[in-house]
Amino acid sequence: MIVEQLSLVDFRNYAVADVALVAGPNVFVGRNGQGKTNLAEAIAFFATLGSHRVSNDAPMVRDGADAAIVRARLRHGERTVLLEAQVNRQGTNKARVNGAQVKPSELPRYAQVVLFAPEDLQIVRGDPSSRRRFADQLLVQRAPRLAGVLADYDRVLKQRSALLKSARARGIRGDSLSTLDVWDDKLVSLGSELIRARMSLAADLQGPLSAAYAAIAGADHRPELEWALSISGGDPEEDVTSASGAPGTRSVEEQFREALAAKRASELERGLTLVGPHRDDLVLRVRGLPVKGYASHGESWSVALSLRLASAELLRAESRLGDPVLILDDVFAELDADRRARLASLAGDYEQVVVTAAVDADVPSALRARVVRVEAGRIIEETDA
Ligand SMILES: Nc1ncnc2c1ncn2[C@@H]1O[C@H](COP(=O)(O)OP(=O)(O)OP(=O)(O)O)[C@@H](O)[C@H]1O
Ligand SMILES: [Mg+2]
Image 1 (tube, protein in one colour):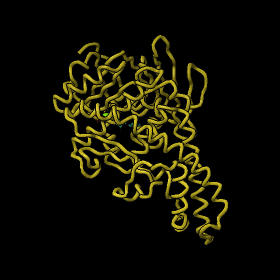
Image 2: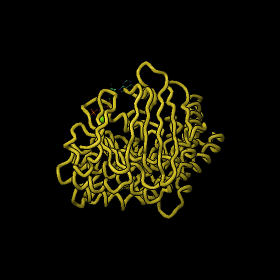
Image 3: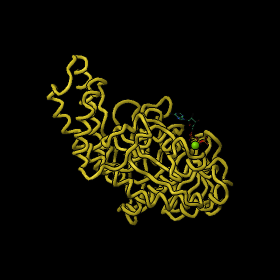
Image 4: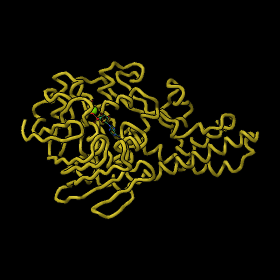
């Protein structure tokens, strides 16, 4: 797919802005703090229904306004579709497809976007929650249906944990808690579905990840990704070294139940659900060592970028929407000349690429067919560069 037209009202530092985009590469150039990343964020919103920089929506609404509007005309082959999102400072957001109101959760069915931004270093360096968020976002892009499973799991988790807390407060211990069993069933059934989906995601990403890493780094440092599952014994949330891999021959459900039984006493003690996908970690390795804590800055950067490129490859291979729009925010300044050239040839292969840079000379000339200047929340067209 490609974005043909993007219009913003009261989004970040844009009061009103309109920009036409072309198939192939589009470069947004401007000095720091002018609004380049804001444009990238607006496009990606349709695919992820959120910001890659903040967990709540309010910062996306222009200071002083109550709501931001983002509109995009997308083209999938011969067909175009008009998406609109209204991001409210308070209350729920609204969405339209071709003028008709829909649930915001419908938008990602029309828009696939993969955004790489400097913030993605957090995926490899941050807490397990950053990696779970990365994986779950991709899961939903791959199969929008899973958004519902994730939301249901979250709700069950909250209710089960609330029950554990109140049991703790009332001093109930051990197996005397029969209502917990009901929640265990739901937790295990939803959680197992997520665990399986995440494991096949990791398996399917491995090939594209190796290819992308080799293409970026120009060397094979054997990047690997593997889920450390809390149902397999250890606690990836609290202890990286306890990371244990795939469940053995027993089913995910069986293992989940056993782990819950084993942890029940400490769950009641702590008032927390201690096993399940919300405690798992996607362990990343290069040269056989965990990226987090071991890899160099350049290696970490290459892994983060490769994860996004691999995501784009996966979506492109599976999606009926064609290629996802690939957005590379501020990436070229970080790379040496060889890596720039390799990334440019990889990215140039997508139906549409959006690149942002503070200095246009940092962007390989092959990608500079169309350059748009961004200045203080205004878009200034430049037809050739
Ligand atoms: N809700 C908002 N209302 C008004 N202005 C905002 C809002 N959110 C962010 N901004 C402004 O937008 C600007 C940042 O824009 P953006 O992150 O797109 O910059 P950039 O061009 O990508 O810069 P850099 O090259 O440093 O990455 C900042 O000046 C910030 O103050
Ligand atoms: Mg930026």
